[in-house]
Length: 431
Picture 1 (spheres, rainbow, N blue to C red):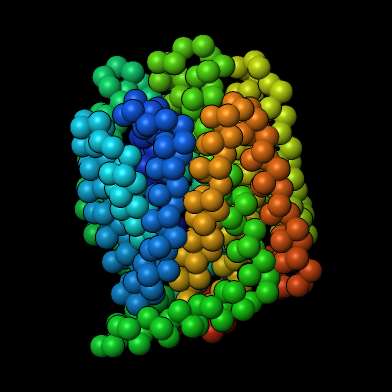
Picture 2 (tube, rainbow, N blue to C red):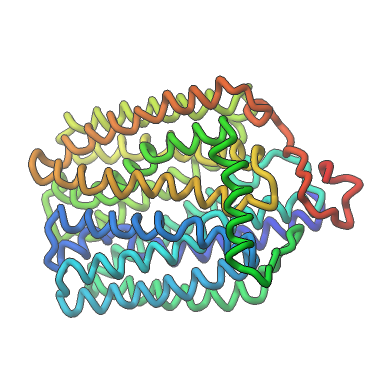
């Protein structure tokens, strides 16, 4: 990797570290926080569903902002929006607010995260190609996932311990402080490289143009379309499982106030992210087709969720959780690289945001349904149902495989006709 690409990678890893650290302070206790505020299981997961509904509403508009006004602008707006909405969450907890206030602020939280989704990944890929990077995307994305896992490990454990030592609201205040610090770091380090925002004097016309081009490169592109159609099943179940494991493991542990144990659940997922990020480029070198890895990851993780239904031992459940997380994490960078190799630079952020939107649609539908299943039949049954739902993604991944896209077997970044040639253009992929 040349010095210019190394610099881009360092900035990407720094932003990933700060962003994940800020978010993860509440990941281990979020469901407990909502239940402590007086919500039941249905209301708590419905609040999470409103969060994902916010992502559905704003994914494409914020993707257009990233492509039209710059990925840096989008990232900075995301840090500020998320800081404000997190503080509002804290106030609702203090006031024991009714459910619909939680729903409204959850939508605002979703808006904050949509500024990040697509923008950071698009910034990274374009900047790497501009700098002359000619390696596998899995390698850099895998390192990003490893850093994210380390940050999540630290943040989720710290959040759980801090909540147990003080109260469930303090980790939310810490998250606000870290987000404000991240804004200052991004303002200095992050600049759009290899991509020129198209700031049109006619914003509505420009938005329509970007959306049309994004549909052409996304939904009208069969291998990309099928991967997007798989997202609601995998992401919807992933949302639910991550948050349901907090009260589920506390139930198995036998102490409903052992918040550090809830943090431990998130920390194990974080550790699995590190292992999965390390595994991804290595597994990719052993397996010829990316879709083979993705199908295997989907099937194995689905089976693990079904097995959790018959597990009554805390430590066995913890081990299965770790395995579930490792299997899913190993496939994430592969999926990211597969999609990016099929998307042009000009619409990259919007197409990636639309892919994230599809996952959020699954979260809106799946989380309340599985939350209600947990109310009626218990958490183990809801996890098993989640495994069955997740398995529905496998046929769509197979359909994407049948399109025989070059990205499925490619070991180098795809040529990008929209990329701006940089000073190392002689060694970079074809512009």
